[in-house]
Image 1: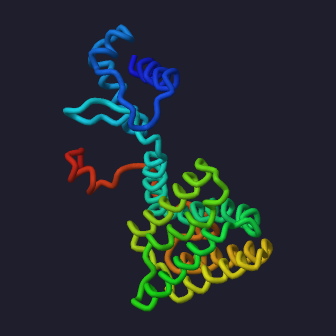
Image 2: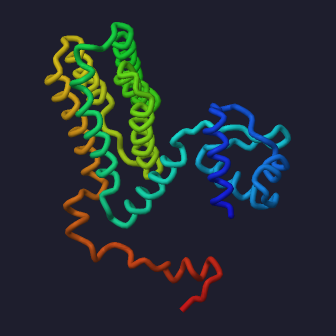
Image 3: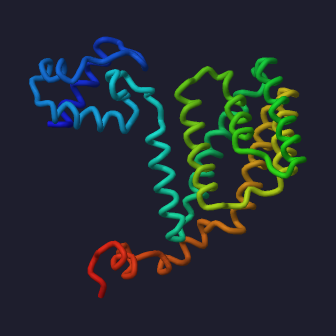
Length: 255
C-alpha cells in the first residue's frame, strides 16, 4: 500500500507542476484524496522524505522536497566505506567515475568558458595557494573549483551528478582518514588546468585533468586497496557473517 501511495503523491506533484518548497495537501486531505488510512499516508511520506521528494516540517506541514541527490550520495558513501573495509578498491572506483566524467567534459568547456567563470577559477586557485601555505587545501575550496569548472555548460543535472560523485569520494576519504597529499602539488595541478583553459587549449586541459587524477591515484596507492591488489586477494575479504565478538556484544549467540 505504501508504494501505491508514494506513486499517487508523485503523480500529484507532477500533475500540479509543483516545485521544491511548494506545500502539499495535509495528511487528512491525502487520506480523503487517495482513500487510504493515515498510517499508509505517513509511511509513504516518510519513504519519500528519505529520498528528498517531500519535506515534512512538524508543526508546519508537508512540502515538496529539495529533489536533491543527497540520499544517492549517502548510499554511495556507505557502500564505498563497507567495501573499502573489506579490502576492495571502492575509492578507486569512485575516482574512476569522476575522472571519466570530468576528463570527457573538460575539452568541451575549453574555448567557451566565460570570462566570469575563468576569473572565479583563478580566484579559487589563489585561495588554494593561501590554504596550502597554511598547510592544507580544504575540501570546500576543491569543491568550489570543480563546480565553477562546468558551470558554463548550463546542465543542472550534470552539475548535480558531478557534485554527487565529488561529495561521495571526499566523504569516504575523510571518514577513512585518507592522506590528501602535498597541498602545494594540489595547487599546481589545478593551476595547470586553469592555464590550459585560459589558452583555449582543450587537449592541454584534458591532459592537465588526467595528470590531476593520476596524482590522486598515486596518493591513494599508499593506503587504499588498488584494483589489482583487491582482485589478487579475494580470500582476505569478509565471508559475509558477523564476527563472533560483535555478535556477542550485540546480544547475539556467542559460540
